[in-house]
Image 1: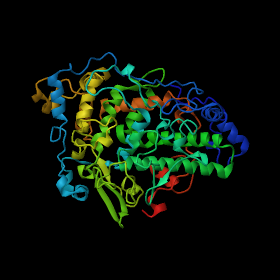
Image 2: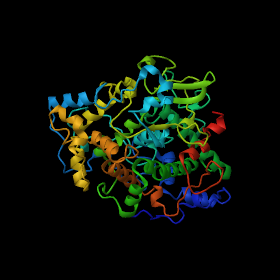
Image 3: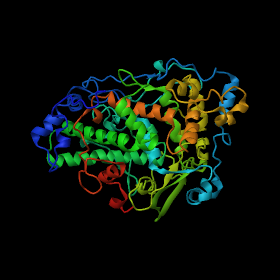
Image 4: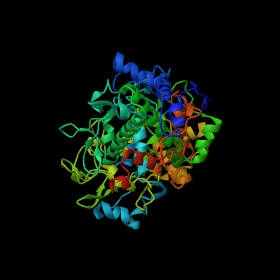
Length: 537
């Protein structure tokens, strides 16, 4: 499958031969300037910019041409249903507030009790195998791979005619935009090797305009306070890598930027494969695909299938908690708790909820709630099932990319199946050779009288499959296969990814300060200087 091919003999030298954490001028220039991404950065600095949201720096030099439009993973399967008024009414009913998917969280008890009272989790159950940060790292990944800004909701649209505003490659274009010259607003004016970051409280905030609008490559990374905090953490991570490189050698900024981006991107990709995917699909699924190959996502170059974008990968919505503890002492020395979204926060300068788009001293993330630093403060996310947290049925318009209704996230997800003429979950299961769910597993859909229990919208099917087959701890065989094959596929199809560098291992230090050859989210946050121990939070 070409996973171990190393195109350049010295490609990994700066990152694998760091026994004393120093880089010689020769090895640095060989390892950076000799790579496509390094050459691309230097070329961009001297010949002109790339478009924001277009191909990443170095993409064409590397010989990869990710498809700019969406496509299909199962092109020969028919839609799950014929568009009709009855279908639209049924989908809206399933996804409405108080409908089949609503976990009916008791919002009246407040955001703290929803977390601390075990009785509040009897229906909307916690997942003991995931921490709360899994949800938002997954959202961050989504925003790095896919962004549909044009297709009309609920109106059949051909995916191949619809542009993906993100590159379908795990290249962090949602962080870097078009690079320092094409997207100068994202970078420090006095040091173009570094990304711009600003102060919002005890932790940094993303840059903002005078109106509070985030100045970032993908506006969705300011939809809520946690994803905004994660964007700021990645900015800090990149800048910390720049500082580390300059302690060894201080060449021209384009070379430093290129090497820093390469190191950041590959460590990020490692976390996806080694930490995130096993949590979501199970280690056995990851191992099977890496050893035996992909069976259904097999393009010649990476593209984003709508079965992933519009259905399977939206499983993360079921993991969102109704409320979170954002930090331990940011609210006048007390923890800041808030609903993920609360209508009462609309128009407030310092919203009572955790929506994005605002800066205030308490609006920062203490990451010990979201990832396990071993201090006993981490909290779980929710299981993958058909019980979605109640605040997701009434989103603020600012959290919707189009800024238009409906404001129920489940309704939007279900109507998206009509947009893309998605196959049913049962049809994909049969195509995979997986025994479909029984009609009795989907009996709640039978009452609509249009056969949704036998031909189920893919997103709903995948949630129910996880609920029935794994008790909601991971995705089931259909959802897990789609998600894992796409993630591993886009990495295998990317010549610059770490999977295609046979000698590459993480070279940045773990939390203990030692280079261990492994790297996890707590290591990234520690290296970035936003972990709780470095900030007293």
